Length: 255
Image (cartoon, rainbow, N blue to C red):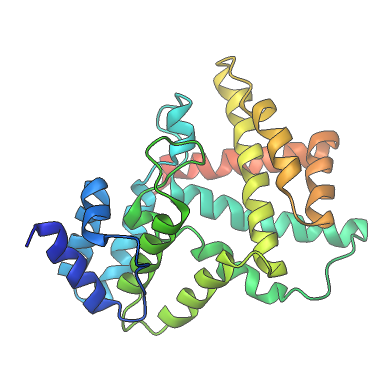
């Protein structure tokens, strides 16, 4: 049995609630992504209480591949993305209150902060794959690896089940809360792209590249209005860009 097959068996033993689709060979999938396999192996060697802290440390080290592909050196990490997204949600709430924006009544918005916090947790183990990354696995493969990661790092954790359920909910884009997380995630990419365009002066115009696709992908009127305000309202634009600058400044002041 290969080391990847042995690792696959260990993962399935640890994560009995995760089903592998019949057309996916988990051992072969792990062999295609050796860094992902290494992270899984390291996590499994830790006791369950040590695994989520391990994930958080990896989250702080994992670069967002979309920026790497575009030549951004030492760009946004997964952890910075998540923290920026949580702040963006707070500003979106203020925008909604101030502008009388109508919210969908079927959404359980109280679940949004946890969903925002965990939606990319698994990338600390699996790594990040941008939408146009040529090395990106299929959606089915990606979701399988992320589910395994969430179950491994949350094993026997008091908050583990809530994190797993929030992660699963964010995958279901029939849910209004998942649509909100999806939309804010896309808007955050535009904000960070605009920040890079303004601070790096690299001539890439990444935000201009992103905007048409993001506009087309948004589910909710409340987030479309927020994006339009970012494009046309200078105070909101400066506020969001200031938050992005704060996030990146925190990496230089962290102990």
